[in-house]
Image 1: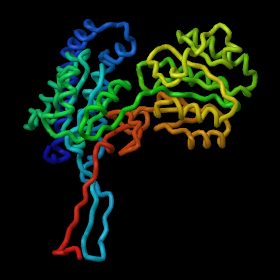
Image 2 (image 1 turned 30 degrees about the horizontal axis):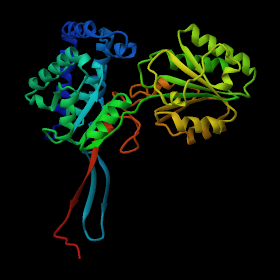
Image 3 (image 1 turned 60 degrees about the vertical axis):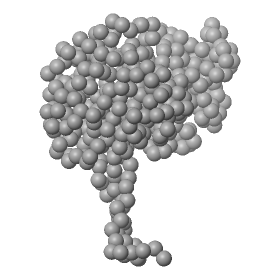
Image 4 (image 1 turned 120 degrees about the vertical axis):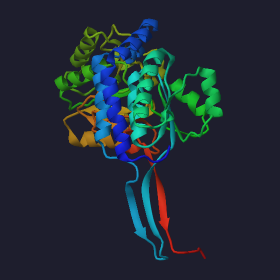
Length: 399
């Protein structure tokens, strides 16, 4: 993809906003076809698939937000003049071609494409078959916007391939791939890592933890837990595991209250052996491997710890490295927890649901990276570039 000026790219985004707004009915009809064909037994995947007018408004807002952001390409990172007379400048540069593999969510077709395009990358969109009609219409909208501005449509491509065809493509891609982002569960991530021949940036699973310290504000904790667990179970930033310090005041009563509130809100519970002593009617966690599971369901584990370091160790052993929260009024305890927990986002007294590009001030996001190279957390516009060194000389040779 040749370097395009900021004005050209923004003109395409202006066209896309108008096309999205003027063709809502076409998109809604396509999404209805997808929903009618979908097995509603998977509630989380079904929620992700739905497109309505509110979702279209959010798509338009995402495009407008990226349009308003500064162009990330060609920004000077550093510059220096060396003793040998060479002038060295390090600037941001596009990756080239990015492939994203994702399930169910048609809004990713908007957010991934707008970010990649503004950062001057070509993007290959491998959506799930469950969103085929919606994604086909959305990519057609992108192509209309590109054509309106006299640009080729291959800057944004939709790949319709089954598992075997995807495997073959990853092993021997028909074009150069610079980065692959698998956005889904562990099976998808493992599949891509096994077969890809280029860099893979993992958009990790959730399995997020919340630890209630002995110095927590209990009413605040209940409010945060309910939001993190029940607001959107299909999100990777949803809560799955709760750890309670056994020295919290009125420990037994608070455990009962927590269980009752969660169950009243439709959440089924699994408890560890110590929690079982209080919550006698709740089933035990059947296997230690459950601590590592991302549920994407109205289900939650409640465990107990005797000290903060035990909570930290449990989270670091079992979480997906996505998000973790400590509920406490003790700033020193919070600081220790946040420094020692190995997650992309750590919170004091706030819901894990804020781990989202838009909520964290990043804007639209390609994914939430749980890798540590080259970026961790929301992958926004400024994270979809790499760097390039420009060296200017006057005939220098190395001795």
